[in-house]
Length: 188
Ligand code: IMP
Ligand code: MG
Image (tube, rainbow, N blue to C red):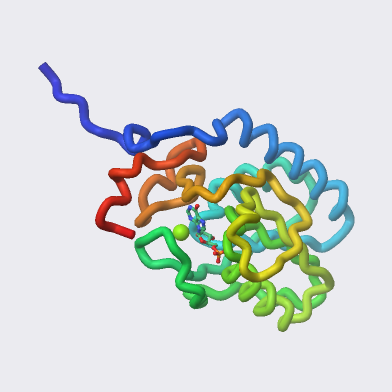
């Protein structure tokens, strides 16, 4: 008899957004971005690591000339609450001066991370600076931020999957969900 090995999906209490719902939304966002940026020198700047699946899916729904660049920032420890302290771990590879930059982010929570990133990028004088966020938790906002392309507003729950992690796990789930309470025990 084989013993079933537990998988990340077994730790999910509730699925908030399934893979089909995400796919449909990414398609809509991509179509709008393609319309708005056609004929412009577009750079999609994604924030590692959480936005990786979103960027990978979104860029394939944006059938115009564009390039990619990456920032890596850290704002959290292993827990589920923000420290408010943002650090740049990896900066852009190429200058963005005079180019149209669209920041692609997984989730807008307190706004600390994105406000820091936006100021950092604005200082490099792009022709324009837009923001695309798959998820928005408006109830948690501390720093006001305008989102040009928003996927879903979600309730004030800590979510994982589709790039989002808890202690670096669960990024590979194809849906977005809420963990069972016992998973957090001792870590927050
Ligand atoms: P903010 O600086 O509070 O807006 O947080 C933004 C970052 O915190 C995101 O890029 C995520 O890495 C992380 N984050 C915020 N909320 C969640 C969540 O519900 N699940 C997983 N990561 C989150
Ligand atoms: Mg994270």
